[in-house]
Length: 329
Image: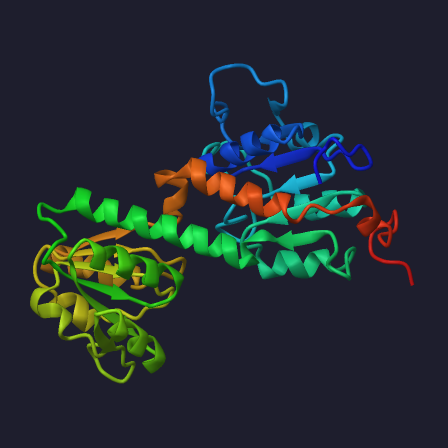
C-alpha cells in the first residue's frame, strides 16, 4: 500500500546491518515513507544531500518512536544474542530488547532476515499467530536475487585474487543449490571447466546436463570422495554450510589453491584444518559470507525493500490483533 492511502501511513525503523540497509531505507523514502535508522553507521545515508524522510537516531528508543514497522538486517544476528551492527561496532542492541519492545508495543510489526529460532520462539508468547513477526528471507524471489548477486561477487573475488583468466581454468563448485547453480552458469559462460560436487545424485544429474563434471561427495571416504580436486583445480568455491572438506583433502590440495567459502556458519571447513593447511600446504582460504552487502549493496538492499513493500499489511489485515498483542479468542 502506498502512503497516499492515509488509512495506514507506515513509519519505519531500520536497525543495524551493512550498507544494504541504508539503500533499503532510501527505497522506502522513494515511496514516501519516513524512515529512522539506528546502528547503521553515521555515514549510512547514500547521498550527501539532506533527506527529510531519513534520519539517523542515537538510540533504539528514538529510532522506534512513532514507528509501526521495525526492520532488522540480513542476517538479523550473527551470534543469536545481538542485532548484527557491522557498521556501528559501538552499538549493541540485544534480541531480548527487541522482544521486549515488541511485547510493549502491540501495534509494532517486525521484518527480519534469517531470524534466530530462539527469537522466533520467544515472540510466540505475545504473538501466537505469528501475525507480527516475519522472516523476509523466507521469500523465494529474494533468495534467488541474493544468490545471483553472491555468485557474481564470488566471480569478481576470484578474478581479483588470481593471476589467470577463468577461461579454460578447472574450477570446482561444492554444492548445487541456488548459489551453486548461478555460479556454475556464470563460470561456464566465461569458459571455465567446471566440476560440481554434491551429495545428491539428482543435483549431479542436473549439473551434468549443464555441461559440468559431476563428483559425488562421500562422507565414508577420508577424502570426502573429492580426491580428483587435488590434481588440477586451482580455484574452489564452497556453498555448503557444513564441514564437507576433510583435513586429508585440504592437506593434499595443490599449493596456492584458492578456496572461497560462500557458505554461512559453520562454513565448509573447520578453523583448525584451515590453519593447518594454510601453514603446511599454502592453501589460500577466504571466508566470504554476505557478499551482496559489500559487492552490490544498492541492488541487494533495494531487493529487500521490494520484498518488504510487497508484504506490508493493510489496516484491515490487523483488525484481528488485539491491543495487548496476539489474537482474540
